[in-house]
Every structure is written in C-alpha cells, then in structure tokens.
Length: 587
Image (tube, rainbow, N blue to C red; front, top):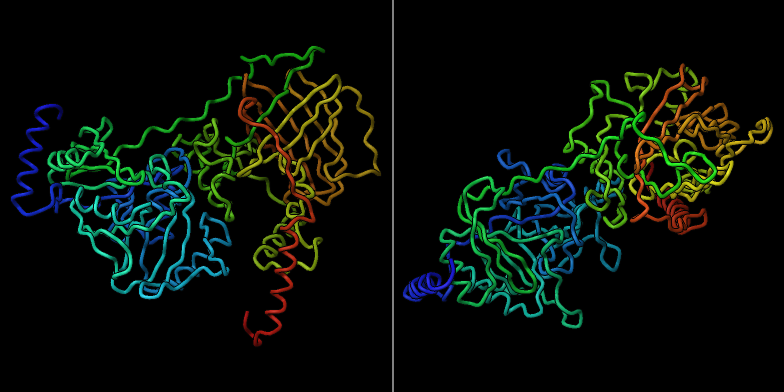
C-alpha cells in the first residue's frame, strides 16, 4: 500500500487508536509468534531441540518445534555467526530443576553431540542472580545462545533477551510500535510484556559499538502475528520505521501475508497475519555424480603421466558410513537424507568446538554432501566380511576398552591420534569434521600425497620399485606405485603394527587406487587384506573434490607435548586423588 492510500489509512488507524485511549501505534492483538533460527539442516535442528530442550515437533510444519509454548522455526542456510553480541543475544527456558538440567547437558557435552556449555569466570556452569533466578548458558550447534534458568513463577519458554545501547528507549519502541506493555521484569530488568512472552533488554556498552544486526545470524528474526496487519504497518510507518510492504511469499505454505520491519539495535522483525504457516524449505542441492570413467581422460603432466595434482578435499564424503546397515538396500540417498546424515556426523563429533572449526558444516563449503550409501563396494552387500577368531577377539577388547576407559598413566596409554603421531593407513585418508585437505604433487617417477590431518606426507615412487626390505617396518608401511592407464595403483606393505586399522596391523596389505574421473573429481579406492583379521579382503571407495580456489593446507600444529596432553594427564592425576578420598563403593 503506497502513496495517498497509505496516508489515508494511517489517518483512520491512528485516529481510531487515539480515540481508544491507546498510544499512537499500540496493538493489543500483536503477539510474539515464532523465533526463526538459521541452521545447517532443519531436520537435525528439530531433533536436537526435541532431545535437549524438551521441545515438541509440529507434524504440519516439519521445520518447527514448540518449546514451552513458543515456536522455533528453522531455516537451512549459512549464517554470519552466532546470536551472542547481536540485537537478540539469546533465548531463555525455565526448568523446575535447572541444576539437574545443566548437569545432564554437561554430561552430553562431554560426549559430543553438539551441546556446548558456557562457563562463568570461576569455572562454574550455574550462578545465582539475587532476586531473579539461578541460571546458566549453553549453545546449540548452530550458534544460538540459550539461557537455562529456574523461575517457579514461569516455566517453559521464559523470555527473549535483547541487547540495546539504550534499553529504556528500546522498551518504549516495542511498547508503542507493537503494543507490548513496558514493565520492569521482577522490578529489576527493563522489559516489555506481550500476551505470551517477555522481551528483556540488557544494556549494550557503547564502548563496544552497537549490537550486530540479527539478519543472517543464528537467530535471524522475531516473528509477530498481528490480527490487523495493515493497521500495524500503517502505525509503524507513522513512527518512521522502515517497513517492507506486506505480501504472501512465493513459497509460503498458506495465504497469510508477511512484512519485515527493522527494530531497534539491528533486530529484524517479521509481521505476519493469522494463519501464517511458515515457508516451504528450499530444495537441497545434491552432490554431482562422478562422470563415467570411460568418458573422461585425465590431463597429462609434461612428462606424460596422468595429472592428479591439486588441492582436493574429502568434505563431501564426511558422514558416509564404512558399511551398510543390515536393512540398508545400498541405494543412493536423497539430497535431503545426505544433508541430514552429514549434519549428524558433524554434530556427533563436535566435542565443544564452535561452528567455525567444522569444515563440514553445511553451507560452509562448496561441495554438497555425497549421496553414497556406504564406502564398502566389495563385498557387493556393502558389509565387512566375517572376522577371524583373532579379529573378533581384538574387536571385543576394543569395545570393552571404550566402555571402561582407564585413566592414562602417561602418553603411551593414549591413542596415536590423541598423541598427534599418526592416524595410520587407510585411516588418515578418511574424512572427518575438519582438516580434510589432500594435496597431491608429482614429479617424474614420484607422487607426493600430503594429508592435512597430522600433516603426514607420503612420497610414492612410480617407476623404480625396489624390493621392500623385510626388516625395516614403518608406521605407514612402504608405498610403491605404478600406473594402470589413468589410475595410480599404490601397494603398501611393511607396517610396523603400531597404528592398526580396525585391528589390522603388521600383516596388513593395503592397495590404493587413485583415479581422476572428472575435471574436479578424484575416485579413491582402498582394498584391505589382512587374513589374520578378516576371512576375505574387502574394498572401500569415496571421492575427493578439487578445490584449488578456496582450500589450502595450513600448519597442523598438533604435537605430543601440546596443551591437550598436559591437560589429559593432569586431569587423570586429579581424578586419582579424588577417587582416593571417596568412600569405598562410590565412583
């Protein structure tokens, strides 16, 4: 609505409000309807909030959950960062026993799964605010800061915490513009009350500038429903607010209109009509299938060998399981299933890292998630062959050790990975949540393969293949290569057995095959043969993607004497002292 028509409507709307004794733009029928959160995968966000925040899924709107009476809507897209430091700093939930809730989330955080706690200066996870409540903070995997508190007067969803350089002015704006009621929360905090929610406003120190805008951050915007959307927009226009014209979005689920308005301190607000049912999610792009091998001929080096050189990454393959589940048909996943699987893999291995550490976060890299069902392509059922008696015994012992880990007496009690020594072969080639770079360089008769994780480089001869010495054994064995058409075939023997792969050690015979099957696609196959562990050889496969423009290998500064090792051993000694003082029979 533009021009004279909007002016006329403003006159009628504003006069009507003044006659009713309200402020010039108050609207008692406006309420906080939803909070929109940007995530990497909406399905995994729904599951996370169900499991850890006790929210309920909404069948008719798969990307929405209800949390203690408030709707959280998720949209799959990259973000510019978390909510902390923006105009909407956090959201808050009230629990009957916040101590127990925080303890349960701390246990989850120790195991990974995407729960990250924020500790106070004294190291505690909970503190008491006199006259208000006990509270603590966690972050969801996508950067939303969540306050957990204990307020007997208000259970479930508790409030939205805003940040403003002028809290009183912000409260006045929300009260006048959207019809909230200005009131100090518990007589202590400036706030505005809507029918179903509190907005509490913290002071943002001016020496820090202004809060960051919420648009495209983890908490993208707050959605308010208005029974009289046109009148609300007119009133906002009268206040000089920047309001987008109301319209039904092209991909909306229902015919309700939506408009956006810029609130104080960079807070993006959506105004929607009753019946708003959200936006249908954008289709997820699928990873490109590798070109048929017979249809692509790899470029040649100046000396005539297939050119495999470049910066490759295994990010797209992160999340592919080694073998199929018993009930898995082996068919390729849909794009949505592939995205959800990779996000599960990322969440399950966060271990407290912020999203900036996670190279495989959806939207952070150019490569879409692989739709490959499993890595094993032989046997044809996609399953590992039966284990030998020795192999099964080693597997059982490994499971037992993980279930009942012992306190490390020294570095030698920890894994080679923790000690930053090696991931071994073929483990070093496997994709993980970060450091999936693979740089290949060639010279006449040699191929150098450097993996980013633990900065390991193998120099593989391809012309002169002297006999492998029977006495000299190495962590990564002896690699000898040859060309079979466009494929580099590498046979690896002579492992010292100190970096076994799933139990396969000194007897392991590994055969790798590197084939460039497209301009930006490298097929990697690995055949594992250890008759002491499995009754037959087996072969796995996945692809690397060329990324010379975006990716580069940086220093991997992990070493055995780093802070992690110091902290692990000092924590073990502290635990021993604690156990020595515990009564018998207690952990």
